[in-house]
Length: 281
Image (cartoon, rainbow, N blue to C red; front, side, top):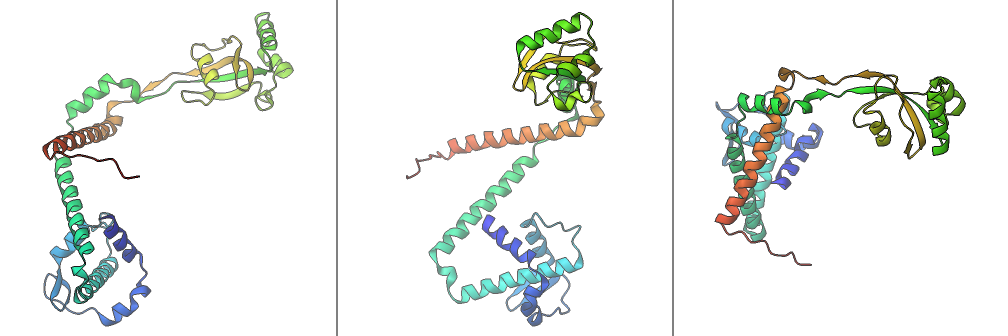
């Protein structure tokens, strides 16, 4: 199946000039109603064309232009002509070809059965609403805090900075005098907003419980010892159900589909006594 789709995708990608020879020998002719193309012993009908499109999920019939449709018809007739010539040369009698056709048939039936199976999976509004109510924290714009810091090389220096703050030395003054963070130092220590997922985990943990204007205890980090101050806070904002209903429904649908595929696969493995042998090394 994959090889077929890949091959046909290549045909679809061919520029019109690449099929010039074919086009010159198969000029467009008036056809009988419902017949899109024909050759000796074969007709491509509207129904056949719809089946062909089902085999090419990347092609959208609704957005296909007349020129694209015509090109696809030409491409398919080339496939048919090549197939006819292969049969004339007896290539269809090759045992490998017969085996590949049988494997293609199994793959096609697998996809058809899977599609039918998944079409039965539904998600109700009640299920979506229940999931939202039980997992509201998943649907929040996370809170964040604005942070300024003083970065120093040692714990002793950090303790000294913290002591200076408690004795009334302005935080911004200590930033200017002590911090080794060249970037934030130019901003009075400000490093911007920190929220869940921030790359500096030590910093994130240190500011989680701080209130505005509160100073942290000195803490170690990969870039040195830090003393930080929270200068502003924005609380988490709960999203409305209507804003996330479609997202939740899709998530639940995917989860249900995965579960039914796994369950069915296990059931059929038992039913047909599937045994997987160790691959030869």
